[in-house]
View 1 (cartoon, rainbow, N blue to C red):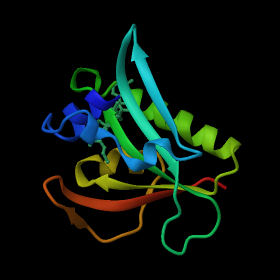
View 2: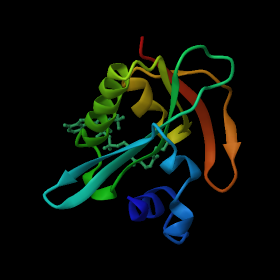
View 3: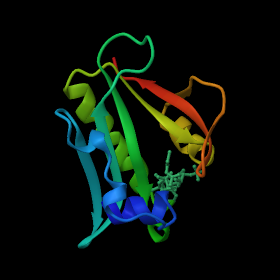
View 4: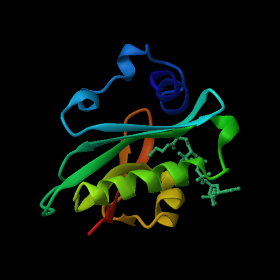
Length: 135
Ligand SMILES: CC(C)(COP(=O)(O)OP(=O)(O)OC[C@H]1O[C@@H](n2cnc3c(N)ncnc32)[C@H](O)[C@@H]1OP(=O)(O)O)[C@@H](O)C(=O)NCCC(=O)NCCS
């Protein structure tokens, strides 16, 4: 998982340890992975985190990434849908993420709405906050 975060999300510029986030190990966090044969191809991490004034139980999605050679085959869609179903089962009210502008269509195709102006994340580029209501 850490090496995919590094290669896909940080252009391979970090050490694996720098690809760990404090939210990775907090209670309620879960990580999903999609394997092709024995190779991890797509990852996503979810941790309890409310957004702004939103009411109810919120989760944040981080580290959504598919290895280059496996993109466009529906892996991201399947993995995220699994996460959404699991979160509904846990009674969560919504899921949100800081979505890269380049991934905005991926998330909006999955039912996410844009809830912020465009903002810049240093080094990485333009983002939007996106959100999907779960119940
Ligand atoms: C965003 C990302 C995670 C999507 O993962 P993915 O596995 O390629 O996602 P999917 O295959 O489910 O969907 C991507 C596209 O493939 C299309 N697709 C879905 N199922 C498909 C299938 N069976 N066959 C062909 N294409 C398919 C989707 O319609 C979608 O089309 P689009 O490019 O017009 O949006 C991936 O592109 C990625 O890792 N990008 C770089 C990192 C990044 O930006 N992560 C998000 C950070 S916020």
